[in-house]
Length: 367
Image (tube, rainbow, N blue to C red; front, side, top):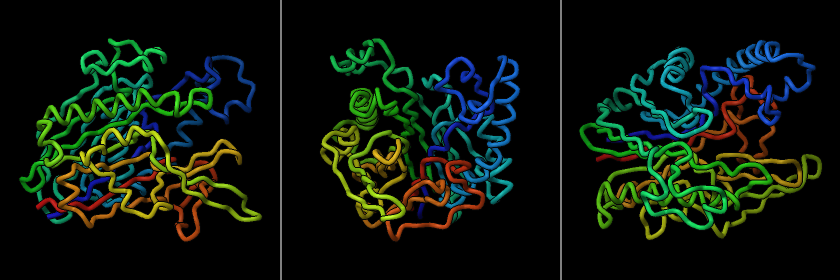
């Protein structure tokens, strides 16, 4: 009995318009920045037209990327609410590829923009085994003080002891697959931020989030037995243990170099064999799920999207290697030699695109 599990940051799956760009230039779409807009009313009208026109192509590509995972259960990040998820699944995914995801769950987390984690599940696996929802538990309200995780580094960043740990949530979802229990932990950790407030500066927040996830799991299953239970952590952790630095250009050729990172929040979760980042079963040059660039002087490929299997679940799936679906990437993404893929129709240089992230999927033996 097998289960196809996937994770995907679908990026801003919203059913409302974001007008904050009128007063905050950092949030203004680059298209609108080209025009001299005289009033807030005019801005709102133009933003509606822009968002609607762009969203149709984007969501077709998002649906194609999800369909390519062939997932029975897909964990998602950056979903506005259940109504947005329903509208997307029925209007795009189901109408395009059929065999819809009838079961959908999300909850309100802590994201200031209101975009949170969610899960979609089929009623049964490709092999016909029933997938049944058991319960869902939000941990969005856990504070640093409650878990004893407040540190001077967090205080220096302005995080108070009574503040919530998770920037979105750690959503605990219990299901059964053919009667076999499985617990999923859906996460979306603190972003690395702007160049001024980058990866190293925001690392203490992600480390605390990872510590909190591990504690939640250990409290659920018992510290001495948790690693042997059947669970997986899925989501965008906004951090990496390795990256592939890119140098050169299209004329003289690109050069790729694998670089290890000394510190990563992922280490908190994998330490002591607690769980395994199964994407690391792929070759080092071929583990990336996101292309990052701030111009020719800063370009790299890295893994931000994870399926971490418990020690026990990883051991019973020792030969399973995840797939990374990159066909929805924009044309600006630089692929190492031999990794090029045929893009989905209408993918643009920068947009439309399925997402800057790539879905990660794995087939698990659940017997």
